[in-house]
Amino acid sequence: MAKKLILIRHSKSDWSVSGQKDVDRTLAKQGIESANRIGIYLKEQNIFSEHFYVSAAERTKETALIVASILNIDINKITFSLELYNATPKDLLDFIVKIPDTKDEVMLFGHNPGISIFAEFLTGKMIGSMPTSGMVLIEFDLDLWSEISKSSGNLKSKIFLEEE
Figure 1 (tube, helix red, strand yellow):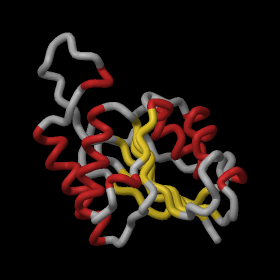
Figure 2: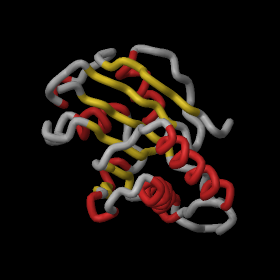
Figure 3: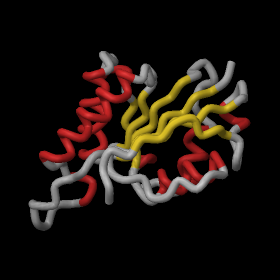
């Protein structure tokens, strides 16, 4: 069975609280609206997964929970991981190859620049910097997550609702 990876960058965060740790920043009003828009888009396009892997940063968790709500995903099935917080492309690959092979479709919520560079690494395509709420869908003609490597994925879809 082929594998499908949906990469989503968190929605726009709120910078209004001075002295706040980066990991604790929440979504701005615009970010909440964009998270809803990307969730609705995914639902309309029938792009979803019951397996969410999400950076433990507050803004990323909020984005994923909004999308999960729109897609009617059980939030108890969401995995939050500090390993995904500001992960490099290598960190992301190391994470992906450990996903159980019984999970054919995975949605991963993360951060720039790692998630954008990772998408380009997997597809061999120029994607550029994913804006907040950006989504890239990559399919692999592979049976095992551990087989994923440079340029092994096919870019099937990308949607950038916001511009940087």
